[in-house]
Length: 320
Image 1 (tube, one colour):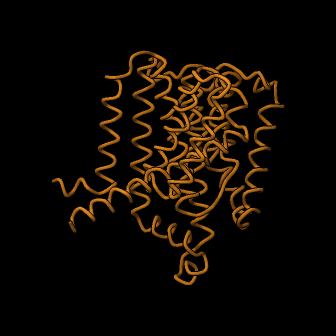
Image 2: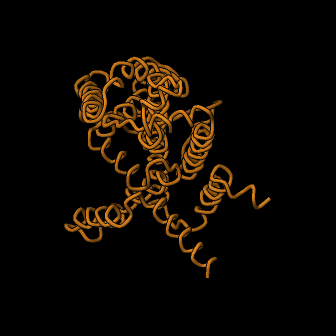
Image 3: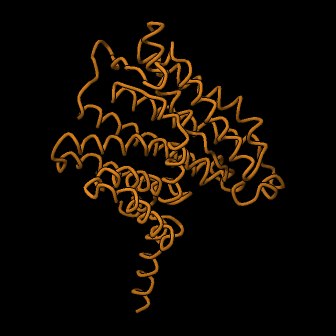
């Protein structure tokens, strides 16, 4: 039984489930629940983005655009067209999947900094649309979001959204881990190492890159929708360039090609700014210093680097 729980798909998922289940017992007030929910929302987006960056080896600097579409779908469709909020969520996911498929086909033919700039342009375009179409989106001031209603029950309350976010994160991690262990996941890792070698091995590189792009966009869309439902308000900032950079930073800081590393990165970069506010004007300087030190001394990312140190220590202990 213990041997079966050692793998990341079972053991790591079990640990994450235990953390989510037990965390409310030590959270003293609503502020900490807010931070925990925000961590979960960011982690959902980062788990998906890690599939694209960490496993498929494709950079995206515009993923906040998909996050913003998910948020505005559940805000605009019920308010302007009277569509039920749960259906608006599904329409947003379907639209993002279609948009990522259509946009990804030409964009993913690019490589390196050309790909980064192209995805950046895509993100800026989405940001400009939600900012300028004020008759639909409320413009820079944003707009309120109708509460999610399921089977006549109005979903509200910080603890309710904590469990919804936790369940969505667990489901997202479970899907990502199963995808990574599948033939498709092995194909993604192969093209990350060398697209030429992957092509020689018979892998359809273009199709798998597009597949990773679409899946990661859906993760970002779901995260954006949950955020909009929880806060009850949405602004263009969620689709902004800085949010894209934050998500990429979470992936790199936690550890690329590490699903649970991405969650650690999301937790660190989400929680630290909240608790560094006590330092007032030095808050951003300290946050930057922490990130720099992590990348200098934990170059592979926080979780993979610490795991390597622990394994090395265990090996030395065994030899002793």
